[in-house]
Length: 427
Image (cartoon, rainbow, N blue to C red; front, side, top):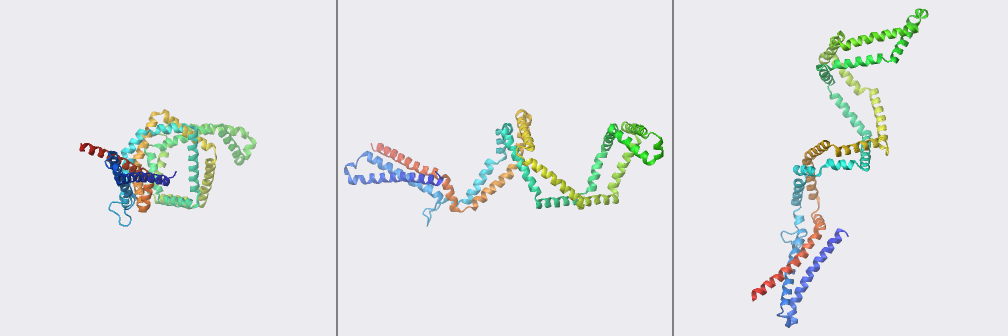
């Protein structure tokens, strides 16, 4: 049964009670005229007074309920009727403030988070395979949708324009200078040098590298010293030369690596500081850096390479994300399930999870509350007064008809009680 039918049925029931009370009142009033013997009957007086009080109570409550939604009478309404429509702006304001203060107050949000323990609920929910798989599919679909948005031509053009504008505004020389200053201040450039030396030493120790050096020496001998190469065993010389070269270079690298005061380290320091000084003070270096920036922005080959690389990456990601029960979906589901397991077993993680959710909710609550209260207020104020009254009556009118029924019944009981008191007082 829909709301209209329920409201109509409730109104008919309330009206029926009122008609019964009125009928009993009329009958008990007219009965002594047609049946004089009943004139002094106590039960007739009791019934008359009870029905009269029931009629008054029912009519009063009918007026009160009807006055909420309609003007009484319609053409020349009595003041303080049609209350819902007349007070539309007041209702909008009060309802929006009620929602804001009771549901989105920071203390209410904090209490809700503390009592609900979202980490426990999230952990329990994510630990179920079906739930983590469902959330994984949703996440993959959302990421795939985001990729499609990014691949849209107007969006790509907007991102490209924004990136070019950002690069134009970027002080690349200052960025490089600041970064190098930070590196050299802690002597991290020497750490970088140590890593390079270690990589070179490791590379030289590889058999493939030594074979490559030997082959290069053979080619060099054949090209530069073809006569000597015919007389001497070039393969043996190349092998021995490769070993000598590897040992010599390895020895030099080891000396540099172990000696913090090695001349090459000092030379490297000087080169780095000289480059840093030129970067900060040389107009020529500034022009070079700006030239690099212009090349980044305007180089067609670089732009084409970036676009092709992005297209390949985007297509690969999109195919992986859209594949049902594929590797991407399985990995994301596994991550979600592991998160759920950790939230259930790791008390500190759950505590941190609840804390951050609470902080985020308290941070967002004022903005969200302002938005919702403004939306509620604007929506109610945009309604037609008559339509608003009809909607309110449709949703709560069925219960208000019970007020009318109760008013009729309670009025009758009060009338009967008053008749009893009046009879007792007559003795």
